Amino acid sequence: MSGDLSLAPSATGSAVPAVLRERGQRTVFCGLTGIVWLHRKMQDAFFLVVGSRTCAHLLQSAAGVMIFAEPRFATAIIEERDLAGMADCNDELDRIALQLLERRPEIRTLFLVGSCPSEVIKLDLGKAAQRLDRSLGQGRRVLHYSGSGIETTFTEGEDACLAALVPQMPATASGAAPGLLVVGTLPDVVEDQFRRLFAELGLPEPGWLPARRLADLPAIGPQTRFLLAQPFLGETVRALQDRGARRLDALFPFGAEGTTDWLRAAADAFGVSPMHFNRVVAPGRERAKRAIAHSQAQLSGKRITFLPDSQLEVPLARFLSTELGMVPVEVGTPYLHRDLMARELPLLPIATRLSEGQHVERQLDRVRADRPDLTVCGLGLANPLEAEGLATKWAIELVFSPIHGFDQAGDLADLFARPLRRRDVLRV
Ligand code: SF4
Image (cartoon, rainbow, N blue to C red; front, side, top):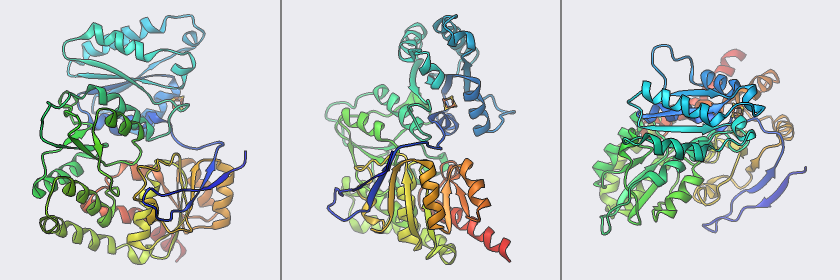
C-alpha cells in the first residue's frame, strides 16, 4: 500500500508541515506496557492482565524483576484449553480475581486488562468487570480496558485506562466554583513541583487524573477546566468533554517555553494577572533555560528523526527545534491528534516530514537516505541502525524518565545530547 501525502490544516490558520500517512508493519509495544508506570502511580489499584505467557513476559521484562515488593500487577494466563473453548474462562477469571482480592485487601480498584488472546477468544471483560463489581461491593470497584496489541500501541494503554476512570469521577455540585484538573500520569516528584507552582500562582488546588489513590478521584463537571500533561490521551479527552469539562489549549510542558505556555493557559483561565504570573514563573523558566544551555553546543544544527512510538514525538521535536536549534528531518507518530497538537504543529519547521502510522521498511529506507545525526526509535530498531553507523536514542527512555516541567528541562535535553556525546568519544 502506498503512502498518502496530504497537507494538514492548522486550527490556528498557520502553516504546518505536510503529513505522510502510512499503513503497514509497525514496531511499537502494545498498550500493556503502560501498566509499568500506571501501577506505580495508582497506589490502591491492581492490574490483572487476562492474557498469555507472552503478555506476562512482556510485563515482567518491561517492569524489571520485582523481588522485594509485592507487585500490583499480574497475568491470568489463558491456556491452550481455554483457547480451544474447553474451559469456562469466566468461572476461572472470577475465581482468580476473588482469590486475589482476598489476599490483598488493600486493593480498592481492580482493572481487568484485555490482551490479544482475550480478544481472540472474545472474552467479554466488560461483562466480567460488571459481574465482579456487583459481587464485591464494600467500596471496591472492578473496571476494564484493553491493552491488546491489536487495539492499542504503547501509550494508548494509559489513554484507555484513564478513559475507563472518567465515568467513576464524582460530579461537581451545581454552582460549584471553577476547578482545575491535570490529566496524564506524572511522576510524583513532578506532580509536587507543579502543585507548588499552581499554589504560588494562586490557582485552585488542582485535581489529578490519575489520582495517587483512586479512592480520591477528583470531581468533574461543566466548571472543570483541564490541562493535558500527556499528548496521547485522545479518548480520555473525549470522555472528559462528555462530562462537560473544557480543555485548556496549550503547548505540552516540555522545556522552558512549553512549560511556561502550559502554566499560562491555567493562569489565564483563572484570571491571574500577567505581572504576578511572570513574577512566579520567571525563576523556574530561567533555571530551565540555563540547564538546557548545557546541551546547546552538542545539539544545535543536528538533524533528528523520530520513528513512531509514544506519541510524544511532535511536542519533543518542537522543544528540540525551538529551544535547542535541532533540525527535525522526519517526525513519525503512531496517531496524530490534530486538535491536541494544534499549538505544537505550527512551531515545527515547515520542511519537517511529518508521518502518521508506520510502514517500517519504507521508513527505514528514508532514515538510510536521510542519515540524520540522531534517530529516536524502539529497542528493536536501535541495534540494526547503530550497526549501520547511525546514532540512536531509545524512545522508551523518554516515557520512563521524568521529563516534564522546568526542573526536568535540562535532563530532557541531555537525554538527546548523551548519545551524540558517546559517539564523539568513541570516534576519538
Ligand atoms: S497483548 Fe498482544 S501484543 Fe501485547 S504482549 Fe500480549 S500478545 Fe503480545
